[in-house]
Length: 557
Image (cartoon, rainbow, N blue to C red):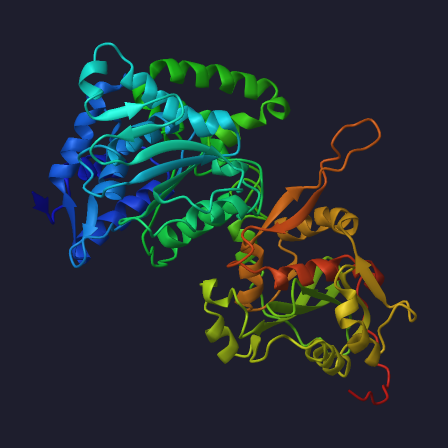
């Protein structure tokens, strides 16, 4: 039996989210799923879903939690009408520690190799960084199959050893793998599940395990994890993609983002909010008591119990917890700029790669007030430009950024911009990342800036640590005047404050911060980092008294 309606198991969880306590991501997901069923030609195979859910009686939990039924229904039993392929073939699920990820993976594996899955040889490969995480879901299913109450009945449908489980009719095999890519090219996976994705530093192993898909019909992938502390890895990419889908209208292309976390750190002090990070918590009183104990320990010694917020509550030292500043302070930078002709300034330059984005920031000061003129260049042939959802084409039409239709942004473009600015302002010094200097050194030398002239500062992380408190003060007291420059404010919102990790001799953390991108491929922050570079040398401006622009000779490019 097939249905085009919103299945009751899906609807139950959606209504729990809509009418109860849930994070912003879950609220947005509920709306997204409703919209998909209202506007798309998709259906839920209700017969398959009920048979899958019927397998829960063999497990110790006997019935799935509502969020788990919701995921099984969408991931395993929802299809396009036109071709009967899975509507959501990829699930990304970040939930608080204790929610039951391993049990869910074990149950899902039992469904996938059961006689109720019509796709033959539907192998389920569970992958993780260590053997316990890779094998745990499989061993959980072995425990079910060896339960004396069900062993005889289930043995008619599943064959198993401690190493492998096979569906007798489906012929699919469930097996755990540690992240050793050698010898994995021969896999014929129907479903690949990555456990504890927060531990992955790169995509090396993920690519090996997923490139074997496509040999079996209806390929699916699952990424299951709590939050973690590794920045700029796959977890950050999946979180960023999920939030773009939920909040920025990006097409999901079969990616289902199931993200559970607190909306902000302050919510942790109200226990009723804890279910926002762990949707299983209302049904697990013993786990709730354990979380209460950990909360009290965290209050007393937060520095020793950082995992409580990260693992239990889904918040870490990233975009949500340590943003550059509050939204109101960023918005307050939209103050008109005066005529600054004849003023002294310093300039900051930033780019990660010249085949991506680059920016120059002219920084002025009058007393406590700071004024910035910021311009960015965008390489039209950048490999990641298609991932940027900001309205950069509109910015270009208004002249706020320059789009360069070339394989890269030539350093002369940045130098020419600074040279033209020198005709109007007294540019006293430049600052840029010390790792990037070699690429632009010759172009800057042509306009009079070089090591020999001692008018270039090569910025190191320690310089940013020193100026970061000043930048925070400027934001908090709203000293910044940037004009209506959306690409610069966008760059701020794409940046997070990160603990430097520097230790003083006693071994105590100094508490210094540097800046980092929230997500490298789709959220650029070159414009803001050009401002940061300029701030590292603003002291040479004093209180910003104006001077006359010196007469300049001609430079040949």
